[in-house]
Image 1 (tube, rainbow, N blue to C red):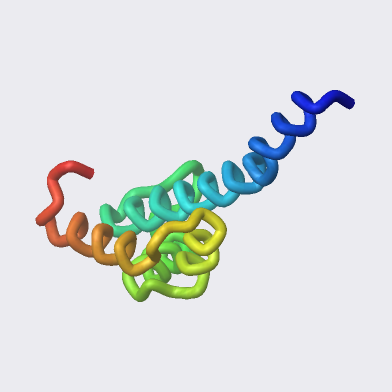
Image 2: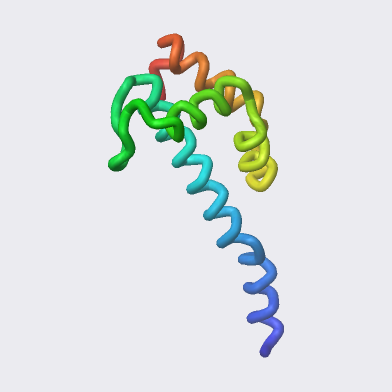
Length: 94
């Protein structure tokens, strides 16, 4: 293994894990948004507990949001507040 290879490995260290946590957060937002709209999501019934749990966790800045954000160096309160603004119709960019 050459020096260049070890440098590349260092830059990519943890990238796969960050992508996984980013996808988990994306899915949580997707499910919460569908719950708010009363829609089914990817084969999950619109009255599913899973959609409601994602919504509740986002609105309450719960443990799953904090966990995902912790791995992504994101501020969970900022995401929660932004989601609430979107639900209230105050954020037209989302």
